Length: 320
Image 1 (tube, helix red, strand yellow):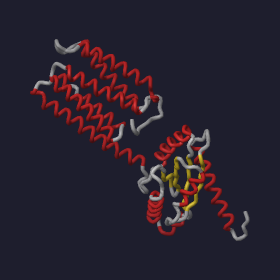
Image 2: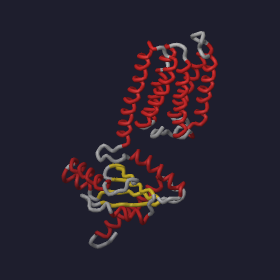
Image 3: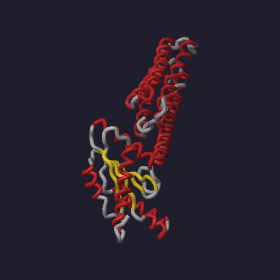
Image 4: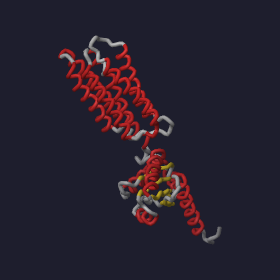
């Protein structure tokens, strides 16, 4: 939810959240239609069934328009409903049977939220459900509930840590530690959308190392890899926190400069001088109607126009 988004009609985060609501609603409906105990709260199960099924429909209808905040709120509501059901359950089996729901909440949060947010959702679900369970569980069932609650927390933690590591690996260039092409484009695209909405400047730069192929040919690819790492470290240390530097492929880098016009970009790029190798750059400042692709195309065209001009002026006869 914090970090994972999809462009399909029903994103995975939305579909699985609807499934969580719908499955819970159907289970409550079954409990209302076929109560397992004479004191089963049939009316409450009926209400929760309506809330669950109605919530699933509402989430699906919202689709990819469901905001991150809305997703968090919907998950919090599920946790509170589980707590209510735990407090009104009349058998220990009924309360302990809510354990898989807690695990489902935790795993959902671990997959779609940041590590910190997933922990918060799991803690809320387990904490509120434990309060509800304390109101209805006999003392003999306390230990099974503790095992259930701890299991939900541990599974959430394990999955969240693994998912966080996988996200980092998927978004990072393994050689330089910078954003890779895919993650850079995603974040730069979001920055461009914000800039166009707020009418703030934004500049994109494409940077290309000069004579990098000669380094590889002369000193080997290991030396070329070390050079790329040194360049990335040198540039990253001189950029602002909001600036996004990425490796686009080979010896080509890209830079997104939020709240920066063309003059400000040139001033900032001068800070990057003094590294282990020379480099060329092309820039493009966002205009109304621009996409990230058009910005990169203009920056790339400026980059290679500058390279051609330098090659032309470097010839002894200055000819074309």
